[in-house]
Amino acid sequence: MIFHQLINEDSGCLSYLIGCGEAGEAAVVDPGRDRVDEYVRLARKKGLRITRILETHTHADHISGNRDLAAVTKASIVLHRSTKAVFEHAAVQDGDEIVIGNVVLKALHTPGHTPDSLCLLVTDASRAREPWFVLTGDTLFIGDVGRPDLGGAAAAGQLWESLHASLLRLDDTVEIYPAHGAGSLCGRAMSSKTASTIGFERRFNPALRARSQAEFVDLLMAGLPPKPPSFQTIVGKNLGTLPLELPKPRPFTAREAWDAVRAGGACVLDLREPATYGESHVPGALNVWIESPQFGDRVGWFAPDGTPLILLTHTPSDVDRALRALSRVGVDQVIGVIERGMIEWKSEGLPVETVPQITVWDLAEWLDEGRDVAVIDVREPVEWRDGHIEGAVHLPMLEALRRVGEVPVDRPKAVLCAGGLRSSTVISALKRHGIERWFNVTGGMTAWLKAGSPVTR
Image (cartoon, rainbow, N blue to C red):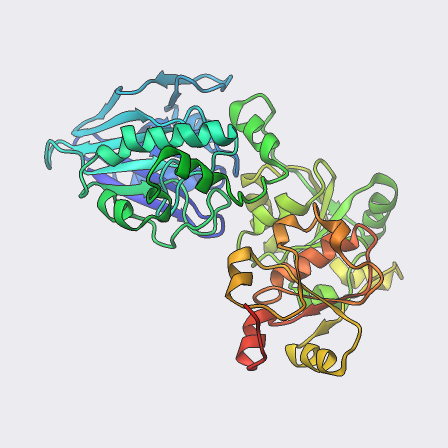
């Protein structure tokens, strides 16, 4: 058996190539839209032909590459029979086996995260008769389980039943390979590890410690992270009920871009680092640095749905990277690129705005002096609980737009995260709501702690 795990570190997505060298065939499981060429190259390198493409469920955090890969390889797409997908595919049900030479993939229907969720129990007949590992999709993660977003408490109950009827009946030595890892929006406390065993998770996974179905449901439903705004759009594209598109941006002059912003409601997506954005930027621009973790997810979260986007950067290679990442999360509305960036923008005399950058030393001094400044912490709850500045307002990044009414509009606001990236994105998003008087705290809480400044827990 030939087995490869492919990791997208920006999004936490995991996909797999499983093949039989003797048969010369392979299957790809949970392919990403932005990695189709990589799967084809890897299979060719191993002397394999991709004949099947399998999905463990309908993804809601990224666009699948199944149809793109099928178009290139002529492989069949395999989904659970309960799927609502409208494109051509083969259907499997619980207990069905897919044979690729010496490799057997057995479908286990595990509804809960989604109604069509399945796991794939993999056996290498040339090695042993017992299963070697299981691809768990979004049913069981390393350190967590899938979110029951689609069906609420009823879905959480289904997930309990799926885990106990299928996965937790497997031997402790069976290895686990999920569809997502740390950095994904599909779980809450996923480990940075990308593999585990049934035995390890049975012992250490907090979600599996519940002693009853009722306790498990309560645990899963408490404090669910918010759904991405593009949730329904991504699901629709993955089912084929919404069209798949690829953006074809054209070069924009600075003045054309400004006209599109003012008259056409376009939004400039500023890919530059926060300090450069803060020095001068297009009014209303959304700042997500191209080097940010989860770049595509953050744009998908904050970019107004359906609003035309115009990219701005000082490095041309950033454009291709951005388009690939955005296509993965279904952000297809990029219409242009400001060809000469802020250089032309300033030379044309077009309006600019700024966000002052302050250090943690500046912030500490302001607080000691009793200066009127609201401290806003946009980190996740687990980070907040580890320690925060006394008196700070906790406004987690992914809840900022929904809770915009809690922002103290009339006061100066110093915003911080762990390092200064998320804070800049939140500031830029809330500036689009007409709220002003912002300061971005460079270095964030990491720098605050290194400076020895006090925190409360």
